[in-house]
Length: 278
Ligand SMILES: [Cu+2]
Image (cartoon, rainbow, N blue to C red; front, top):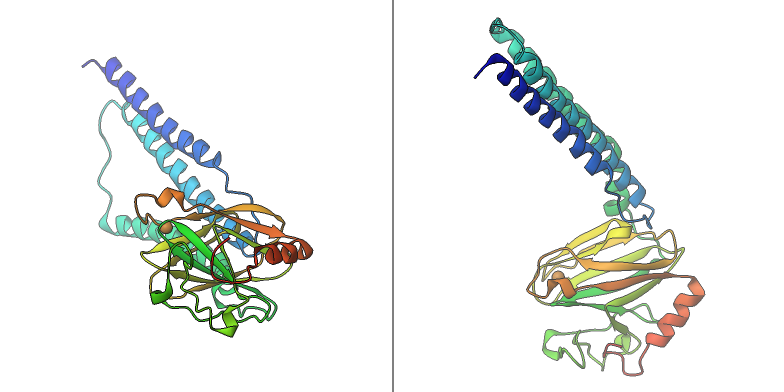
């Protein structure tokens, strides 16, 4: 192969690598998150932005450096680089590794720990709206405790997918005013939401993209999440765990309403018998 052909090929490869770096960064920057609707979500977005910007800079710098070395290396008449000393190699590798570690982990800890505390460690306010979500293949059962604030007893033996999907004990006074819906839930704006998450069968994952809320639900466990909605609207509930063949059908709606509209909505959902979904 002639020298000119070799330079042409190496230039093409160098431009290809530079294009991959810049094109990848441009594509990544064009993806936007779902519109934000929760208080703690702003911190999660800051952390994601920080990670994407810092790793994006490293990504572009790496590809451009590679392109530069290919471009200049192909134009050299002879190979005249000498091997570096072992000490220099250790120093450069160590410094780069330390810098990447500090930038990535330091940033995540500094920005992420306050969000972690707000999301996982905060005590729910006394006026939080408590809602129980029971996942099953392939829908979301939603239960409100009613005016008494107490969830009634339920049992697996009493479960019937059509008439009593949560197995509510209708003889229990605490459960008489429980309100049950399927795939639709609402909360009032201005109060914290406290979700109790359960599963009847396999592992599901409760996901509210706009609220930056995602929690795996494992049968036999009852994880809780607490968050503050910041605006009214109708948002999607998704299952982010591949939980079976009809996993894609686990789509529900999470409505944030004004307090008055929420009271009306809850009253509309209430049934005299409490137990059957609306
Ligand atoms: Cu699922």
